[in-house]
Length: 291
Image (tube, rainbow, N blue to C red; front, side, top):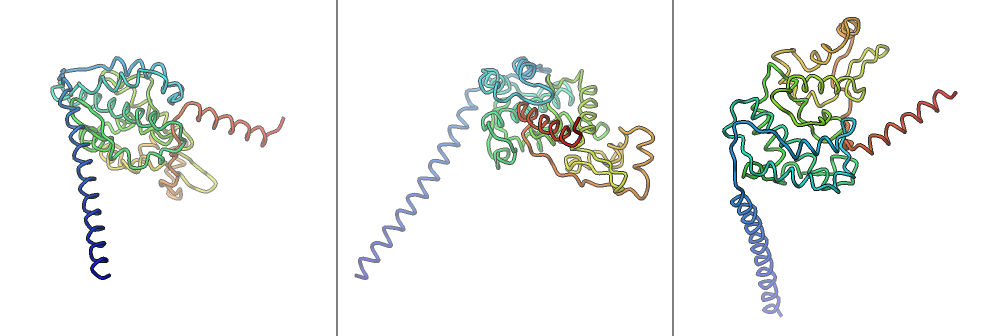
């Protein structure tokens, strides 16, 4: 009996070992296929680049600073846009502004791709750890959203122009809104200021309560607070710079509590969802103000 139990335990142990080796094999095969995919990509290294397919996608499916994901999923433009960035490398682009434009567009496009692939859903947290694990081909190499953000975009951000961060769209309503055209060096300055303004005037991102003596900003700026230090001192001072003189004076009062007290809005920046939220708010206002 003891010998039989010993043989059974050895058999179980061998099965567990075999299963582990099999899983490792699958992982190696998967990594091999992923590497092979990039081997067959013909890489171009232009000194400047404009995104034709992505521009069409944005023009057709970005509505009121949100994405019409239901319609986008039926279009070939998303797949064509991903093919567009797969073979273009920014390695030889003429300056940092060209490279930053390229990586911002690549990042924003991949965010749209991530959301479209999982749509329908309502909360960006439903993506889980996809942004750190799932990889996409850009310029013949594989990148996750996280590596593009930390290794490509953030090193190129100019601390004299922190508004550049508002051109990086994360897919949630608490993030900066998506543009209806690609980022370009020529329009970057104008677009980043307009995007910053749209973010600041959203009551979900900035709130001033005179009665409670509070001025609160959404946590998106807290995540990038160091970026605003050189030019504005703090991210909150940056937001205050948008206010009219009377409001600036009121908020600057020493008794006003200033902080990042607003919750981040993780709701997917989807056009239909946005319209539903706006409709509910309108109905609520009517109920509070009948007639």
